Image 1 (tube, protein in one colour):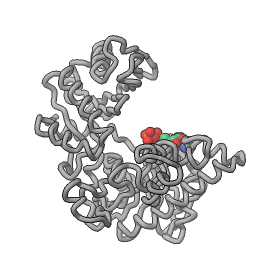
Image 2 (tube, rainbow, N blue to C red):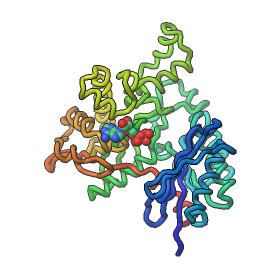
Image 3 (cartoon, helix red, strand yellow):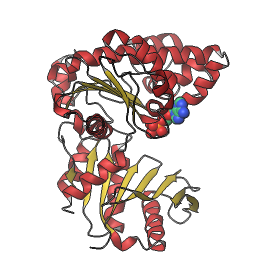
Image 4 (cartoon, protein in one colour):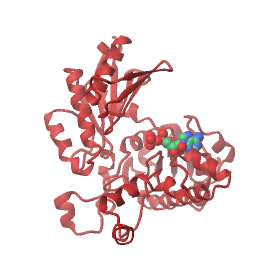
Length: 398
Ligand code: ADP
């Protein structure tokens, strides 16, 4: 049988991330990043065999133009006729979608209906879907939702303590995000440890620029730190995470900020960046802290403390804690943060293996607790593209 390739698309409002995976091996053969989409100087960068190639999108500087340029690049490598299906990351499926689904017009309408829950992301995801349908005519398209995995959360975990009409009329509740990553890491952690996923009480910390943490027991999500939007929960690169909701009134009264200005401040100027006054990037924060930068030291301590507190609360949600897994750029690489977290939660039965922790980085999985540690901590590199590609292949009947 000839090679079958899956195209995975992840569209933001001004960006498009794409990857072409071999359906048999799961290997990424080509990847791309379109940036500044919607602006006249939009471009797309392709990565193939370790080499980068930048293409200006002058005639059509939008999502469709980016997908057209991707098609041209695929033709160049003889991949175009092997693309068998396209998988799309869709941020919010609300309560409608608890699993990935083959896209038809009804699903497009369903994703449109969820726009109020992800006003920046779902419209961009729809642009990617429309562009793919137009340019890759006749191929199956599959939607894989960031929220889907968390649809198993019990009511007491997803409800806010506000008047119920707001939930009934507007869908105001906690949804959670990073679901595709959690699904992948939960499977992979169990596989790596040689244990049955359904009998493990797991807490997984997905720590990237956006960061969240989830409780997984009986193989499903029981709770997660992000809520109605990705602002709730952990300290992130530029997001505050949990904050007293009265801060909106406080900022209006004392700093003259409108609701949208305060929202912007909490989403884009807070977190590691706001606390440190230095950077949103964890590496820069760690380097700054080592050099004695007071803001960086504070940012690191607040980040770690909030994270450790959440490990405790997610252990409640999971009904105990057998395995703590770290993933995402920070979780996979920062032995400093992992070590500080394990120190805080040592009372839950974790004994760090310092050498193993220092070694676990650069995309390698590894146990970072000692052999006699009562609970296990492990580093598991995430692979959302692979999960999307696998769902896409399965739902497309490949
Ligand atoms: P995104 O959420 O955009 O996918 P990533 O998962 O790529 O983000 O994570 C990006 C974060 O990972 C950044 O804060 C970056 O500084 C951090 N990171 C990457 N490598 C290291 C490292 N060696 N040590 C500490 N942090 C790292």
